[in-house]
Every structure is written in C-alpha cells, then in structure tokens.
Length: 334
Image (tube, rainbow, N blue to C red; front, top):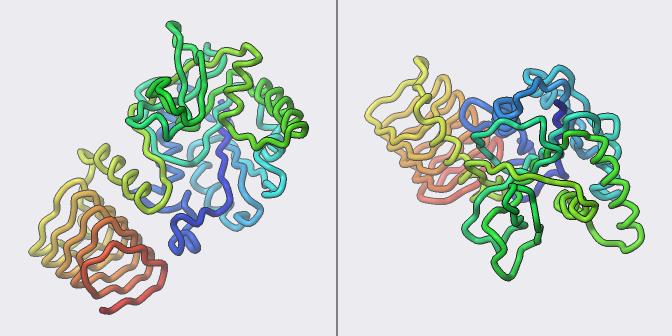
C-alpha cells in the first residue's frame, strides 16, 4: 500500500513555535507528530507501506531531510512532491500522479487519531470518520444499512448524523483518484468553485462509486494551541501504561500526576507536574506547578505556574502564572 501525506503551507496557528519547529516534527512524548501518525497507520494498514509520499510546500523543502529520516523507518521508499500555493489543491494532488496507483491511503496531517480496525483491501474506497458532539461544525456523512455512504453534507444546519469526516481516504485503486481529480479540475475550471478532499467523496457519490466508512475510536485536530494541547492529552492518556521515568532523570521533592512523559536528563525539584505534560530532553524544572503543557528540549523553568502552555527549545523562564507559547531561545524573567 502507498501512503500519501498532504502537508499544507506553514500554519500560523502555532506561531512563534512553528517558525523554528515545523508542526509535523514537534515532539510529543518520545515521537514527533509525524511518527505518531505513521505508527498508527502501519498498525491499521495490514499492508506493507511500499511508499510514503509527501505533498509539501516549496517553502518547506528544507525540512525534507528530517521528514525522510522519520518516514524511512516505516516505508520502503520516500518521495516528495512540491506544490505551488497558487495552483490549488487539485493540481497539487495531480502533481503526485506517479504515486496515485494501486492501494492508496491519502492522509492530511491535521489531527491525532486511533482506530480499532484493519484496512480491508477488498473494499473499493473508504472514508475515516469519527462521532462528534456538534455535527453542525463538521463535514458529516450519513450511512445506509450496508455501511455505505449515502449522503455527504458540509456543516449541516439540520441534523444528518454525528459522523464527521476525519480526513484520511482509502482507495483500492489510486487510478480512480486520478479520474476524480481530473473531473474536479474540469468542474472547477468551469465554475471557479474552491474544492477540497471532501469534494472527492461528494463527486465520487455522484458517479455512483461506493465509499464505506471506517470509524476511528479517537480523533483530535492539531489546530491552534488548544487543539495541540488536547491532542497531546489524548495521546498521553492512551500511552499512560507504557510511560516510564528514565534512569537519567532526577526527581526530588516533587509530585508527578500521570499521564506525564519525562525525557532523558530531566531534573525536577520541588514541583508538581501533571496531569497531561510532555517534557523533552535536558530540561530543568524548579519550584513550579505545570499542567496540560508541552515542553521541548534544553529548557530551564523556575517558579512557574503553567497551564495550557507550549514551551519550545532552549528557553529560560522564571516567572508567574500564565498560559503561554514561548519560542526557541527565549529568556523571560518576571
């Protein structure tokens, strides 16, 4: 099976963090966001990943080496396609034509998910969905009695169902995706409408192509600080039984409230850490209370009361109660 990962332009929703730490490479626990997603895809695929392809902005070319280093652990081959922001999604997907063959999973890197199914190669096409509490805020689908998608609606004003599209789409034959892309490109050229991956499902339905639903157990988008913190919380809770404190860590006079990830060479003194905290390598924390917070590497924190915060690399902070995003190499004393 081939995996096609779509990465958009550098998002601004986590600036200034992502100016120096691209979102796919942000570390949560032991792994980057990209690796967390690849591990889950491999578990669900039931097939060897013969190729992992990325569609990425030309501006992000400098991170390809790091992406390839991660992806090469899970796929036999790693390739990159670069998009032009002025061309739109469909033409950029078409640029990856040589990878749109055979069994194919298209995965936007937009959120953390966990499933309890194995991708069924006998199915023609499938869409990954998740039950949501507020369907009117999502693109939703309605199923028939055979689990085939009967109806697709963008952010319905009236209740259709509580199954929202997560993003990943599976095609038994990637060549069919090529046909859909060409059809949508022609349609867009005529009516100038914007199109997205959701339109692939809608147009596939019009062409009487069956799409089935695969329901993921958990789904949490990475959008913004709140979304990333919530996704981290879900991931840490899922991994709480396998979390261990490394021998190189030094913890004195402190309380650790699970789930918490603690990296190598971390020193924690007279502090309360957790729940829902991920701490990278070479971090010193003194006299602090930290909850629902992501801390990267090589950072010193003292007298802090962090809640719902993201702290980048090489930061020195001594201060007071706040909800912060602090970028690399910042020094703050209050």
